[in-house]
Image (cartoon, rainbow, N blue to C red; front, side):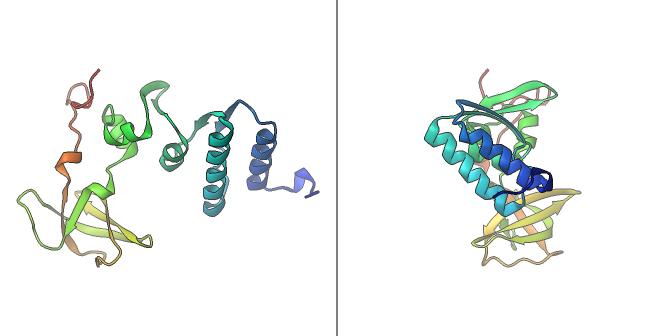
Length: 192
């Protein structure tokens, strides 16, 4: 509790700075990558605490991050910028479901839960890919599928077995797809 500030590491300094700011119960907080120097477990715990104080005290937070999980889990509304220009400002849910343009869609990525995977071809539109990596997450597993030097991520139940190098068929949930104008790069579903 009584350590010299010069002996603290970056992670500790970052947490002290956050604690000092929160202790004043501010009405507005400007946060620039506040969790960047924390290890994964501490990062998650601190993110939950920030969300708690945000919700409980009604603190307005302007939060800069390149981590989509942080942005979506903490924000009521998300602003996505590209070279200083606003690309989309909306709820995380809307951005997730209806990215305004190609840049936003690439930033948030393909939703792995919208990709179906099979060892046998189940439709004429199914494509083939090679399993690049298998990432067990507990109840679910992420399969990284490689097709033409592009990695596509699919979320499957843990019981689904796949081996690196194995050929698989995959498809996408058509009702979840977004189509973009080739010239303007705008989402054809989004008005405006």
